[in-house]
Length: 292
Image (tube, rainbow, N blue to C red; front, top):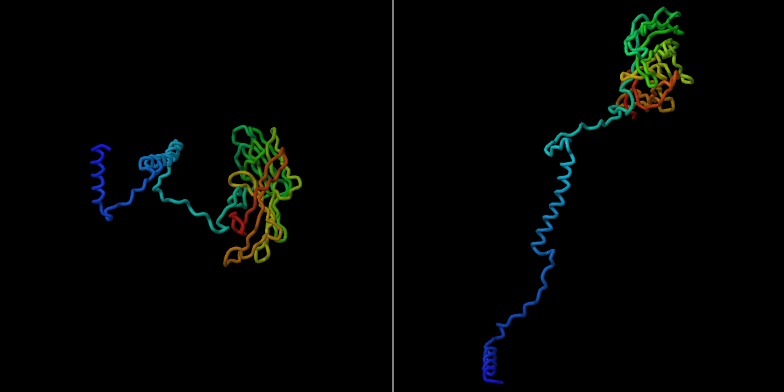
């Protein structure tokens, strides 16, 4: 050992003797660096990426709208509440109401394109009871066909599926004890001739209604009318044990009739009834509603 080494050793030993126990500190532990995802820099990048992902659908939604109106976030309007009671609702696919006392009596002309040539024609009932004819002025020609039975009214003229021209309903009514029976006939012009359509096997092409009040036990069986939107509809009062529901309106004794509805069409010259749904009515009120 040379002189320099000896002097360094003596100096270090002397320095060590000066250190007191209370000045000693524990050794600082070695800590591994935090993973990359916990470092401030990567965290900021992740947050920015998340914000970008969230923003993308909003941007796409706005662009996809094209010409459509973009909803106003400040719009506080709401749609009208749905009806809560059965009598306030209307069954889909059914007429809004039924009709009665349609048509006109003999002698009154009705106008319509009866032969499909694009010009207006005329039709009326002529004659007297027991000798009534359907008289048409169509395409510069006069056409006449006899109508059998006691006839009361003709019309209104209407369209019907299966016919290229308007059709002519004729109703003949007769009364019995407490009941009115109305038989309907349907005429149309085919190949320059007046043709009557037939309803084979179906007595419903007409009406059978009671002249009695509800208190007297009067009930209807079926009813046929020309719908305001076109076409001919029959309403059959169901007789299956659910025909009449008593006290259907809270606090009321009015009776509700459950009905099945049919719409008529033509297959050649045959009338065909197609069921279109069920609804309910109250006597002496033409409104058609849902059922209780």
